[in-house]
Length: 112
Length: 117
Image 1 (cartoon, chains in turn brown, cyan):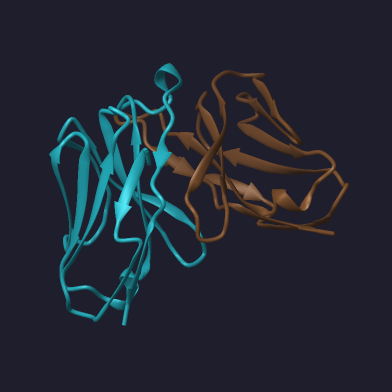
Image 2: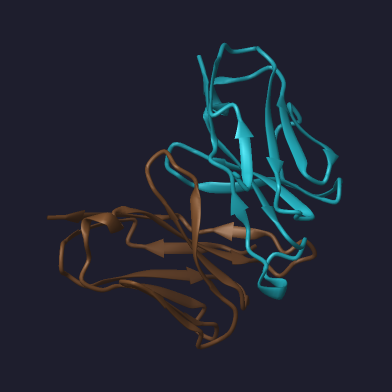
């Protein structure tokens, strides 16, 4: 059964600093998604990573995928308060229905 | 204009009641989902329908019953509500049943916060 783990679960960082969130998954998959969730809100799609070595960037966020290591990273550059949210990675299980399995989430709090 | 819309946004009800949550998508997608997010923000898929056909039916109590009258709608009916059913329920849709194929991604509704007292 596919398991998706993120670390850290909680990240408090200062504005202007850099940090990385890690997403590990247990079985082979070549489709990985990153979502953002603000408190009390829906999930917003950030990145879709479709192949080994894929790298995508949007503003201060950059996501990458290493399918051999079963690892994706979400790198935050020069954090700002507006990035405070919970970030989820999600992986398709590749089974008959290709379910989307979510990671545990990382709560990011950017302090001034 | 909302792509995936759920009603109601908040639902407070007593134990033992029966309630429904409605979901509609105007994206022309073929597949719709129900996810449950618990108090620790863990997201777990419950059901999925593709063109009105049930394709994912996770291990959830049979008090939960999805219904899809057409491919743009997926409702969730819950019988005999229990305290443990309190959570946020998210509806989502994707263009293709194979999430991940052809760059298919899932789009989520705003969630329904269910509180059972």
